[in-house]
Amino acid sequence: MLPSILWGQIINHFDNLDSKWNVAKTYPAANQQNPNFVTTTTTVYGFQGDTLINSKQWFKLYSTSDSLFQSNLLFRGLLREENNKVFYLDTLNQLDTLYDFSLNVGDSVLFDIYGMFPEWLQVVNVDSIQINGDYYRQLKFEEPTIQAFDELNEIWIEGIGSIHGPLFPNFPVK
Image 1: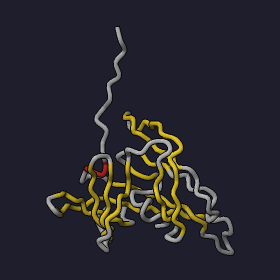
Image 2: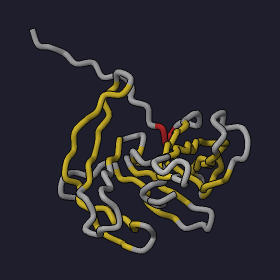
Image 3: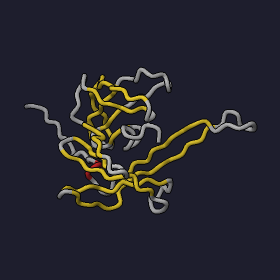
Image 4: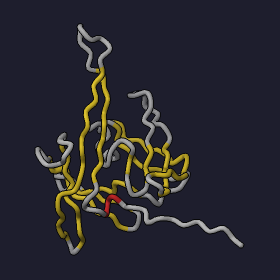
């Protein structure tokens, strides 16, 4: 008798209008009265509707600080997924491949770190992570050579995106 492994249907959040990403950023916010104070802000990203461009369906991506995702929505661009790639059309109509989840160890991606330091970062590890009982493919990238920050720690989770937020490969500091 051979053991069998049952895999659940993995959710591709880039192909689901109900998807939301909650991205928390923690940073120093010290003052004279509280010299060690840090604060955390959360930005919620999600889809509100879709549109057709050249017969292809694109989801409209918005962000807000409203945890209910109902007010102060800021349009961030359009996303669509095809063949393990996520395409992004920004508000200036610039098209970019935001993610390529078919990458393997040794493949590289161009990151424009802080919008000033373009650098090719290599995939150094591919494994999986369990989230809500489902296993997702996970890609870990090498650290950049620039010394602008301590550690980037860039990890992509297939169907979810960067651990830093869905637009991080395109907007690393926002």
